[in-house]
Length: 450
Image (tube, rainbow, N blue to C red):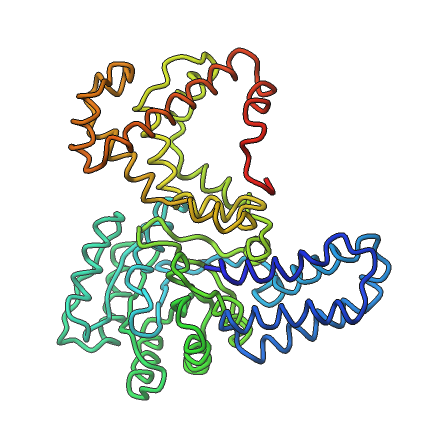
């Protein structure tokens, strides 16, 4: 989401690292670059003015002047101010109430409320072991109710059917009563998308809120909406007692301004970030981690959490055993690793969370392509069981058959075989002489800056 903003801010602060002394002039140049970067990212103008003013006051004060590394001290100030703008700490859902705890989702049309409802349900079921019910109060969009029913079945949540002839506030009150009867822990209500300038629709969502009495009222906003997101957030904040915000589609080509603006405009915490279309692609929003990501410092904590939840422990243990012995690593293992990489958001998502990953040259980052990973999985799928277990059996005619079966070229098959052999040699080095040999083998192959 923050690719462009991260690149611009890194450029602006990189020039100051290592400076022995900072003057008002070179601080001013850096702040001008930061201001332009924020405005290009669609951050609201009042937020930019406030942010730059606060950074300037701190930068020209004793905090930087007394530092032995003033350039790094300024980067620290920028990081802390980003955290302050986005919220001081992460804020999860507060479901401490007599069941059912009701969560109401509201937002503009197409912001991703229905998908977010399913993602929240899956998170509550898998991580907090809650009994969750879903209901749709969207009586306007064709097939909205059927879409939510399909998603509920996918994530293992209960679904309460509703009729398009019913009034939305009646659907909400009946759903609360039914959730209480079924002894559900959580009821998530999906509402129709509405423009903030549509007075009757805004009145309707207030009536739904009054009927359901939710403990969490979440404003769902598209990260790519830019300045429109800020205007909508302000209107929904005035109409409803919002408790938090969910940013959606943050994996797309978004400028990221919404994340920095919406929190400042509403005063409400960003609770979750949607990082993809799949129902498990929902991250808790941590302001400090996101600020680190924006400044190219990575986000190792989130990466570790994702590994714990998404990596198959049994498969990882088997691979570790093969790594120690230096034997038995085959294409089945390679396919498993590629699939787990895709499950964690792909190569770009991993690069974004690694310190310095977003500071790699653009030419190097452009070669990181998840389509290549999926192409390699297709090649492995085109192999027979014997070929996967014993890659040495793959001769010229087999390569042509594998390429035809996977819709690729023989050169692609050769490239994958070469990659596999390289990994196999690396594993043997690890098993024979530990990590020291491996690091010597990799010397000179690492990208600049790593």
